Length: 603
Image 1 (spheres, rainbow, N blue to C red):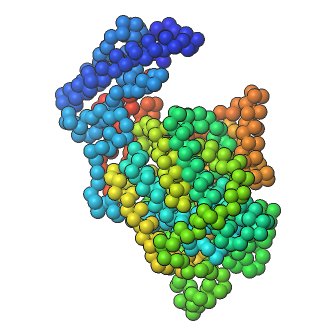
Image 2 (spheres, rainbow, N blue to C red; image 1 turned 135 degrees about the vertical axis):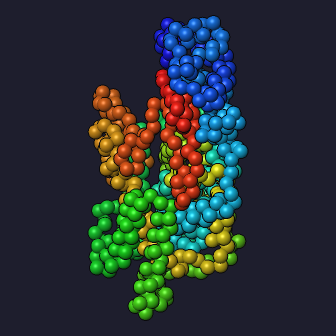
């Protein structure tokens, strides 16, 4: 901004390609000032001089910058602000300043790959956190498998279909550990695409039944169809990233996506209630069937358990809370069976445990995917749902990357990360799996725990592979309300955040769009509901209503995150007793010292 004002150019002139190119070239030449600033910082640490003595680090006046730009020469007193990305010219280096005051500790970094290139963890720490993450991921993965195949038709085949979901999670995690710029990235089957996949599966079952096809043909059609659409989704995301269109996808209003995410929560909750009660409903108008005598008796443990997990996870911010709750539910269930003298078979007959066929040997997990049995005519009607899934998953993935970037305090390349998501989905689809993306909560968990090694991600993969190879089905021994409680937790979390908490982070009109989108999707369906919400947003924008934006710098407790102008918040590594020195990674638009002796951040 200083550069533009000092040269006397207005916005119209800046649109001129030649003017912009000249400005970019000048900025590139000025990037050499970074090395001089680096030397001054080293001297400042060595000599422990005061802030007043470091005149060279002060933000230059507009006239100084203007003269430097016009002369196309490097200038020692030019702030690193000018070395930011301008029209495609990326900074050649950023400063990483830690508490270690030696010259070797001040490194030039430009991407997260460089940031963590020479850092790792003890193998024991990576294994421990990998096991902890696997314990949290696996039950949720199985719950997601129940959502995708929520139609009554799939009930006898759930052990195999859930194993396909777990295999998909292993594929996603492998891809994210290999290709992501973040060594601590966690990628699994994600909730953003679940609703679309479930809708497509139910529609394909309906079409095949109407045409009189048997169970083998239906299973082949659904499993192959979902895999093909997942692979096509991956191809679409990869093309979006290749064409550098991630920023274009992000223009979809967050309030519309917020309404969709709230509906995902509602859908997870409804699926959990159906799983526990054995009652299939199509909407909130049929929820009365959940509260009859027998159904109410079956659903209350899952509802209470899910709400308790949500409250405990939210209030007690510790890595052990969720695994402890998961183990606690199982212990309470089997303890109750022992006290009442009820056998597992009797509990299964009463409906507490799912009755399903024994799973085949693990290498027969893909037997349902028979191309010669697919009813191909059932696939084209799913194209509108698929198109909606592409845009929603692309934006959801961008939101995940934004959340990770905010916590990391380091700029991420959205197109690169979206390409990683695309590759992961292509491979998952070819392996018979389903859509996935970053799991930002688990990724941030690794980040805060100080995980810098990709080994932790591979431990999660190993745990998922072992659960698939096991000759028994975990579904045959875990109560239905165990999985349902996790779905209820997700339901409460998403609905509370996007239908209530969000009101404090945006304008009333934008909040109204989020609520309306949620209602539209519930009434007229996912694709039409999202389009209706988008139309409402554009209409209000056209009428001049203040729509504002949903505040991204908003903490989980409803408080603004501690991020100053241009200075990133410290990454506090305090999970599980593992504590390290706090390091602050410096963007090119600020200079800051963790020692507190000198701090300067000006625009």
